Image 1: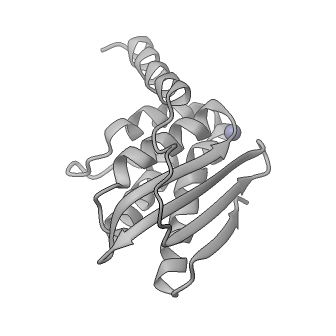
Image 2 (image 1 turned 60 degrees about the horizontal axis):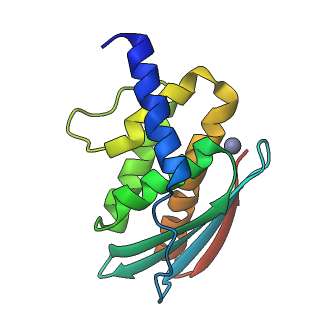
Length: 155
Ligand code: ZN
């Protein structure tokens, strides 16, 4: 596939998630809630996780922001449900490294996240793509410390 065709595919994946964001439902019981803010773009996201025996049984993603942050949150909702908190944390760490130019491990199942690597050519958008995942990492820390609410701001 040519680079232009790949860019086009990435754009379509991002637009699809932007137009039809996943995870915008009421999950009922919320075990940990994390809010993230990206001041450089004005993106806001709140993740609500339902966790049973350390497994994420449901996730809601509430937020407003640009297409990239919205798409990234939507992909997060699809990817982390059913995973343990630790597995979700590992996906977030892999994605962070990908956005800074590293290749993901071959065995990693990243779903539509790979489409967001197209954003790397626009450095100002990297924080938008990372916001929901940085927020997820903060949620994992809060959960480990027995807190149920947390807030993080990208630097
Ligand atoms: Zn943004």
